[in-house]
Length: 303
Image (cartoon, rainbow, N blue to C red):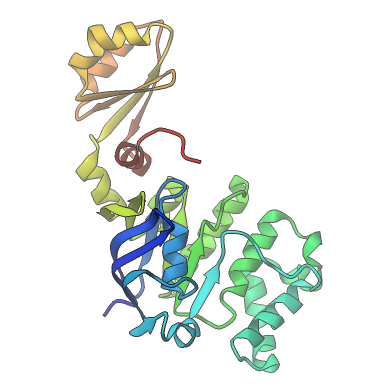
């Protein structure tokens, strides 16, 4: 039985249907990703799953309890890392964890017993008495993650957990999330970082305009939708080169700005040819989840 089971879920705001009849099943012990452009419906889906927003139609089961009807009981076993940090600036690191434990009905003595391990997990052992405004962005994000674990949840919802972090802080969060996965925790993750999804997710779905347009493991989605090799080609004569040579050497070409993307199943002839083109520069790489994402959702900017 999935820990989270969503069927036929719909939610509209006025004339805009934000979630348009989606089905999601999240199994125990997996990291499940929700990917999509801005406005795809990812955050609304999380809010619906937690019972914070009422659906227009469809069913939601969380730990075999109906949501929103039994959402409060279900959330006892859930941790949440929101998109924006909402730590209490008037409290210290330790006091934030203590206060959050009370939300779950934990006695202060029990929360205090858990805090040292949570601080170690977040790499904040020496900042327990620091006020929130004295922490860096990465520290605040790690504290928000540690706070979500204060009730020892079985399922953790993470809404874009590394947005706005520098690469070092992002990699540390990824390391901590892998530790949770290895401990058998179940994660539901929304992210804009395709590398994050490839590294962490066992399965994922890609959402666009409120609908799920693809579901599977990262590797399966790449194999299903994209040729295995990609060459990114740029240069003043790239358009003329594409017309004269590229279309005959690639399975598929796409132009985005100044960059030409050449998708191929066998790059040997293409690479040999490009070596003789002094006016062009190129990068050869394997296909990625980002290629799948852009193919399915388009390359136009979403606001």
